[in-house]
Length: 315
Image (cartoon, rainbow, N blue to C red; front, side):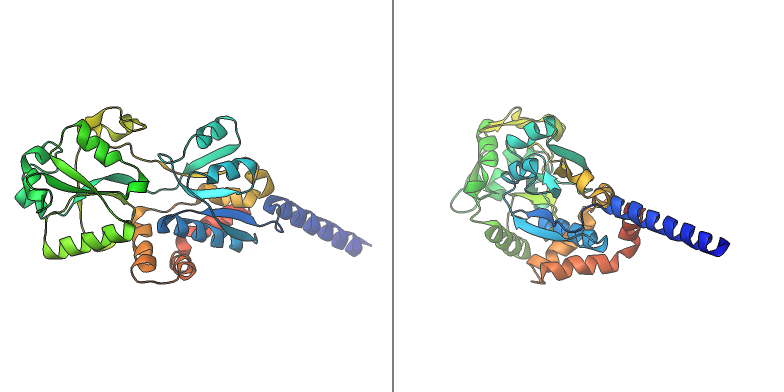
């Protein structure tokens, strides 16, 4: 009888622990939907996080969604978690949804995002006042070509990405011609060509991006803290501040934690840095490796990093 009682007690405790663990895991049948935006770095963040969710026993689904429209779907629970939201490109829906509690900001992903005007280090020899923005007034000609001389040539984002650089050039009366890049690929091709030939170049660009794993760049310095420079439609509030920089955040549907508690606990721990993401982007965009395999390769090589996240989420 005593043996039966002990066995029954053990089974009861085991079942109770299993039930508690299952409760911590939440819904293992409904797929967690992760949006896929327009750039490779976000694809990698999404797939690495998704594969870690799989290790907890969750199903995942990747859904193509624009960087701005995705927030309406997250607010409604049609999409569930975004590990790489650039907060300076979110539209009007996002701040309202956060304020109303429909989208929850979980924390920073760990990326140090930057947008601005970058140039190869060899340009400092031709323009000793760099990286100061004021040096561009005196050095415009050294950045020019036959089409823009005596003005400098500034390669900007493709036209459908907005006109921030063109507006800034006009506002501070900089003697440069803003020339839109045809596409990200065209901009990268121009970077490689100019850099390898040591030709003049200054370009509006961003990081993280794989190009920074292959080439070194310096950035134009502006006189004030970028985060104090609030951009307005059609320009910037204080031109000499340059460009508003982004916080890169992890955000989730408000019901995410309740439905998938262990996944939420992992999301809180999840992070990637520029030094980790840049070489992964290089593998996908430049070396043409498969995205899913690159994400899996990071997981295989970094067990010491992510295993504590999974273990903490499981307990």
